Each structure stands twice: as structure tokens, then as C-alpha cells.
Image (cartoon, rainbow, N blue to C red; front, top):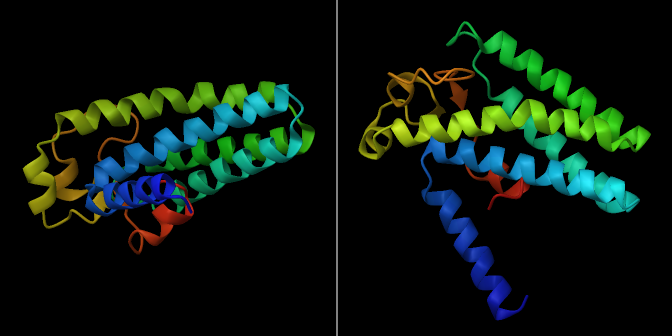
Amino acid sequence: MTGAVAKRSQYNRDAVLSASPVRLLTMLYDRLLLDLTRGETALLAQKWPVAWENLRHADQIISELASTLKLDVWEGADGLLALYTYTSNTIVTANIDRDPALVREAIELLEPLRQTWHEAAETLPVAGLQGAPDAGRFGGGAAGAGVGAGAGAGAGFSSGSGTGEARELGIA
């Protein structure tokens, strides 16, 4: 690794390690939409290996989001899980059929959620997140209190086992 690449990698790793749970969630959504956009572009250019890699990575992020969703914390979680399942199936089909229109559909479904999570994250007090007893969950407990920003607000995402998932999902 060159010096600049190593420094950038360290910076990204530090950003993930020091991020609040809500910030990690917005980072996942940002990377998800980046992967989908790159996958769509690669499909249009008929760069199949690049498309496959980006769409596979996007599907991994959706799987992580779905697996950390706490269905018993928020009554709307079932709907969000259904959206994740549909989007995952759409991405897999797009990858198999090499169909950029399906990737565009996934982008159009997920972009409003990404924007909503960013808006919700901006309304939360930073000090409240870091000191909250439930800070290990995205949008759950004290961290999600008072957030009424629509889809997924207060949905109770578990942060998983730490930053290992973040590194694997390409945000570290």
C-alpha cells in the first residue's frame, strides 16, 4: 500500500470506529447507494465483473441492515424488512439478468430512506447518542427517542458485533 492509500484507509477506519451508531447507519446507506450507482453504470457499460462486485456488495449491506433490524422494537419494522427483502431480490435478479433498470428501481426505493436517515441523524443530539445506555442500537432506545422522520425512525437496529461488519461492508 502506498503512503497516501494507507493514510486514507486509516482515516476511514478511524471514522468508523469513532462514529455513533446513527452515523454508522448513514454511512452504510451512503455506501449502499454508491455501490448501486456504480453497479448500474457498470451494467450500462457492459463491465460485468465490476457490476457483479458492486451489486454483490450492495446486497451484503442490505443483508446486514435486515439482520440487525429489531422487529420487536418498532411496529413498522416488518414493512422495512419486506422492503429490504424485495430490494435484495431485485438486486440479485438485476445482477443475473444484467438489467440496469432493476438497479435503478432499487436506487429509487432506497434513496428516500437514505435521505430520511440523514435528516433523522441531524436532529439527534450528539451527546445524547454517545452517553445513551442504548447507544449500541441504531435508532433504538434513547438514541431514537423523539425521531419521527418516517421510514425506519426508531426502528431499533442492532450494531452487530462491532466494526468487523463495517470493514467487511467497505465503510472502514
